[in-house]
Image (tube, rainbow, N blue to C red):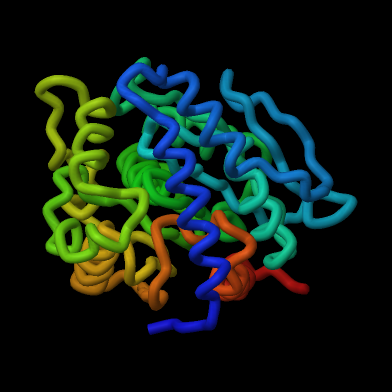
Length: 302
């Protein structure tokens, strides 16, 4: 289990999250919640960027240098399929880009409840296809995602495999949400220490994403139930203070059973999506380790 000293920084992060959630009431509109989520995560960190139009979706390419790199990371933002954007995750994408020396492409897939499952998966596949059509080489391409974006990255791989497309070289998942039934024991055992992902909130988000009568065990919604054979190597980072901890554990076990290379790192005291918070030393160390993994798996040279 990974451990660093970050008590005061972690407490400040918890207070930021509590302030945001505490400002929401039954009357708060979803549009306001989305705006608040983007604002609390927004950054002024500078980077070389290029705005993109990806199959009708707003996108961005964050560049590691003056010219585009041959390698590329396709980033799937988190937010429970209802929140999040290339605005909320810009800082995380920049830090991953700079650490890896690999360009990162992010995109705004359609969100629930306006656009229910499988709209986000369709958009993920469209974004991957868009990259391939513009010359991205699968052996030099990787997927990355956090929370719901981690689940979406896996679902996109599964849909690409079913469509006969070549798969990316690797994937990194941060605090992945992979079980829309929230069936793991840690949804109870970590409830008191997770400030974001309480089981009742998780199930409401799942219902908004799936719609009435939607199947939470569908493999493109909950990839822990998928056939995982022939997928590329994974690196998974999750905090010990996350209710989704068992999602990561179960998924790693099933990857190993399918003979897919996987490394699972559990970070002591870390909370859901801890990499989003640059003030945490663990966040930067985690990103550094993921960057090193991506350099190797995509044959990047620094």
